[in-house]
Length: 219
Length: 77
Image 1 (tube, chains in turn red, green):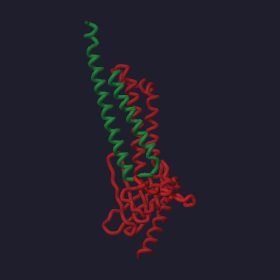
Image 2: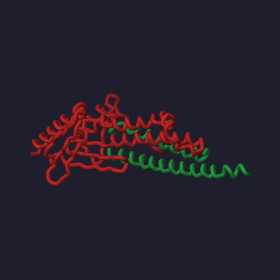
Image 3: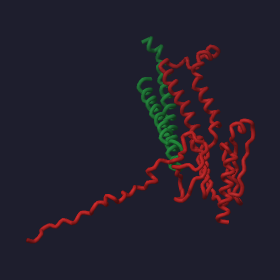
Image 4: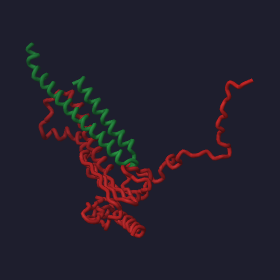
């Protein structure tokens, strides 16, 4: 009797003793040395990705300004936050400038005032958070961001770096161990400054080692 | 009638104050939208540098509160 339909043999599943292939095991693992929300300096950080990053490029240093530099706006913001508590006392000496407003406006103005204070904190925080310098095994990258309007990304190859030095002037900078790291590049290229970087001496040592290794390898 | 005539400048001033407040809040909302865009732009330049979820969450909470304040002021004031 002729066969009308012959089923194609099913593809056999992998043998039970054969190991199941992993789906990109590296991506599924959480980063071992991640950069935290308030990290200012991290050596060999994991999980960072930036525009134009090459596949074999490894980040050696992740640098932000020292967190202590945020004290000024934190303090000023806190002052603004508690200022309305002293308002009745202040208004004893000065005429109330909002007296002409209907009373129902007071709640809305207070809410708006506190929104402005939180926004002030937020803008200052992200100005610190996104101001990042990176030293990779191939490049030095500086990402500048300030007050929501200024954004600049600059990079130079590590073999163009000629000298790395640091400046730590003042008692506060010495006490909290932060300072400016100057990365000088060859020729007419722009120099880089890692402003108020924590542990500047360590950063200089690590970057100098990197330049030395690079020069040994590539002449 | 006499009473209404007496309080009408106050009502007009209240209306102007409301418009002023709404305009102020509207510009603040625009400012926050710019902030959201910049946060997203910076996260596309560099990612993994901290906790982007918290950074985004805070700005969205601010934006929602500002929009709520605008709408509430529009109705109540």
